[in-house]
Length: 343
Ligand code: NAD
Ligand code: UFG
Image (cartoon, rainbow, N blue to C red):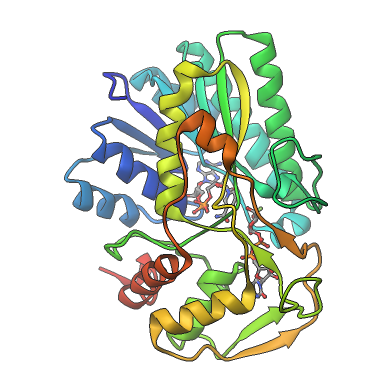
């Protein structure tokens, strides 16, 4: 897979991006990261360099700044791009929808324009299982109907449509939209991981913060769902497996044409209570919880049919829930305040 031209990684200082940059460097790729650090610390990339022994090139650039982005892309002439950069908080997206549309969609358009100017026609895009809305059939295949229940989800849907149209217009363009299920965990070194701003919205970082004593208890959003124990069921996927899926997608570019959407999940669902128990085992600490009402927009159950990823990318998730919790816990314990708390 190694090529003399670099891989451009937008949002590469973020949670999933940093784990992917690490694997790209370990695979011998040259990597150029563009990130405006609106939800990340440059420290993540310093640690990626420390772990890999290789230095990614970093440009602190906003995708909304078309001129600056264009200049970086002209300078490096990437072979392909992996596009992580985006705003991702579901609740916030309902409060400031225009900012979400502008950042995620305009940012993507600027990226496509700048890539086209250097004849770069290979893109891997971070989509999400949120594009399935409230799916009626489990496991969810890529052929399931698409819908969105919030502004964030709609940005992902629009971008998928936009990318499909771009591929129809240009037969040489190749795009893989990776629909992630629920990314969790951290690199086993405990050096890079998820570093949410403020109160975490997502289950796993919230649970680890309870286990480490930063928060008194977990609020469980509903125990009256039609699931085995009444709590929501999700397909949690280890971030290291997820990152590997991006390398597999780059490798598959020669084998695909046009725009492909591919689920990245394990194919297995766990309930909130099962995740909580697994974290209690990993941490050796109790995780107190209180049952609250359902969170608006949540679905009861979501898990992937990951067979297309296996067929097309030769990829499958390997890590179990226990490993996800062990690694999330190691990261949390050694970085109780995230990157900001470290020298
Ligand atoms: P993250 O916030 O850690 O990473 C996103 C990165 O993009 C951040 O480093 C941020 O600073 C950067 N960024 C945002 N807007 C930018 C802009 N205009 N210009 C330059 N940089 C910008 O999030 P993550 O969890 O690593 O997610 C990566 C991608 O995967 C996102 O597109 C997200 O929507 C998608 N995704 C995430 C999840 C999840 O649960 N983590 C699930 C499905 C899809
Ligand atoms: N949950 C709680 N308490 C919390 C947080 C979550 O009980 O404090 C529950 C939720 O109700 C849900 C489950 O834990 O049943 C998982 O919730 P998350 O917020 O971790 O994940 P979601 O499935 O709601 O959404 C995540 C991302 C979305 C993305 C989606 C699919 O936040 O951006 O996965 O990839 F679209």
